[in-house]
Length: 298
Image 1 (cartoon, rainbow, N blue to C red):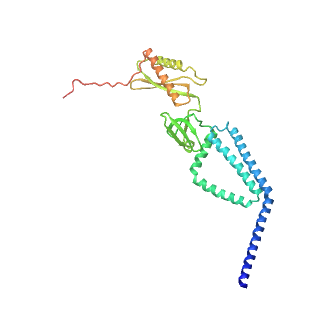
Image 2: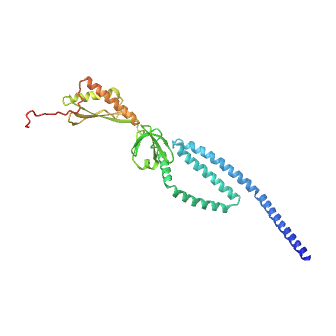
Image 3: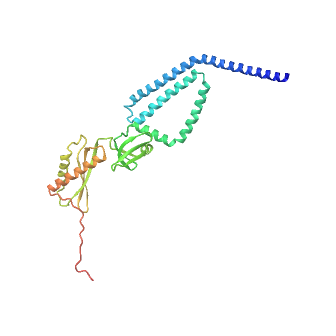
């Protein structure tokens, strides 16, 4: 009986000791919370302040870059990086205020390893991204420009961080990775507003060549009179062809895309043909003459 009473008393003392330790632990936590409460409030104010600062700097940087980088997707990349960077600094400062320096070191180490792994996995994507940034900063291509690159000809309808989209003359969309545009030859019709058109033609051997020259230049001047200071209508005879004496005429017009250039050349050809017809200038076509021998041996 005494043994049973002793066991109960031991259990009671063990329970009391456990309860006292639990109460002491809770009181320690409460005291620590009261002591760290000012730091929590300062940390909360700090992270809210840095969040507001990140958004304000994002808007400010976007306004500054609008005159430098015309593509919204590229501008958003820079502004988002700045906003995230400022907010991360605020988070690290808040952890420091809360005396969590060990957590900061662990986060920085983990971020370094994760960044290395991500950069290796996304090497091609990052290459296109940096190519897109470089293209945007250089302003060599703008949305709406008519360009020719990698065998494709069309209007630029979008430039983003990964690729450039072209709309061809047949309305098909071509998506070119930015690295292909940056690393290959590119013809941008939008970089200059003046286009030098070239028309090739031929006249009959019986023609007055000086008269042909005068009429051709007159035809061009009648529809494209605005030749600049260092620009002129050039006329050159090139060769004695099989059926004609061939020449080229070159002149300058306002054109920033392939469609305008084709329209200009079409108008010039129609005008030259019209003025040649009015002045009886022959534009011959190849003729094949067959000769039959009458007295051919059988």
